Image (cartoon, rainbow, N blue to C red; front, side, top):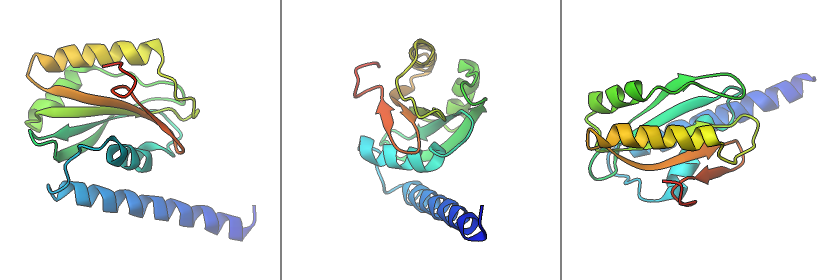
Length: 155
């Protein structure tokens, strides 16, 4: 690898990180409502899309669908992460969230939801319903594309 190639990759990473920070700061100003799947998709792709390991992230929202916080709750390996509903419920209560958007990345770039993805989504939805927290969507993202469970009718 030449020094120019190395510089290019560092610059691309810096640009992506800067974009993620700008989008997140806009969302945290409590003026941006997360009513558009495209806005959420762009943010999540910038946040998780280039990760080499699977990360499960939750966006905690207020009753107006404004972002309270975004947390990477679980990290795994290149092809999976263990997700514990109890920890998601605890975090939702800590943030006093009214709704959540679930997300995880697939480092392999294969975006089709697995049966395990569908099952954990249903378990999380059931657990969060007990404390009156709505699951708005679950996204699977990669660096180049994403899948919305809501758009596919999987919620």
